[in-house]
Length: 251
Image (tube, rainbow, N blue to C red; front, side, top):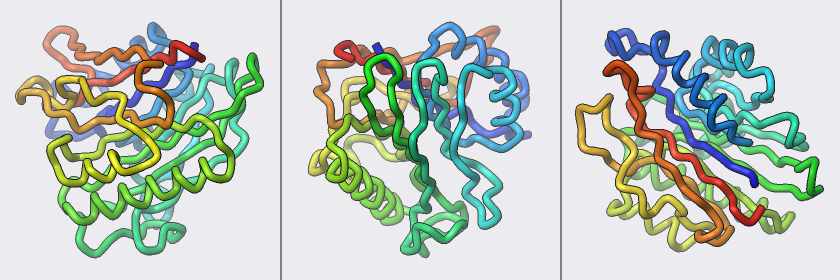
């Protein structure tokens, strides 16, 4: 069985105090070791965090670049278990009118550029291949979220049209299913296999869970077992988001 986990790990924000990433990171690493997913799809990953995780989890390969003009800053990193998969191709594009201009963005969004990273992977044991895409949509601009999601879904359709392979899209979309942007998913080539989860964003337990984290795929929904990891230790949550783990039963 293959499995995939989407993880907004929250960047190391000084205002988080006892929830700062420096305190949470050992818990996250232990969680990954215990769950051992084939794919880890991180949002809000900074280079220093990626370096730490790659050293602590040497069994994973990491791909993706930062969203800023010089390729620094936050990335939508995909990590994959090297013993199970080989990365055949990878790409990062910007959610903007000029997707291959680093640091570019839509005019009607926040100051934060947004990216999508994808990889094509070969499964050693079966010889099968699949695509994994990971993104983080804008937190301020409604139209920018729609445009960004449309771009991601268009790329997904292009990849599937080129090679008819299983494809997964993970990420923090910054909208809930009642938002009009959700209709872009229902009209696309993929479906939301996380549609039935109660929520995922809770601001370190301060809010009722809001469903803004997603796993989409072109595979049947009933082919997956889902687990929402709402975890804390000593009053410290692993992140301000729950992590979502999908296990592919029919792989």
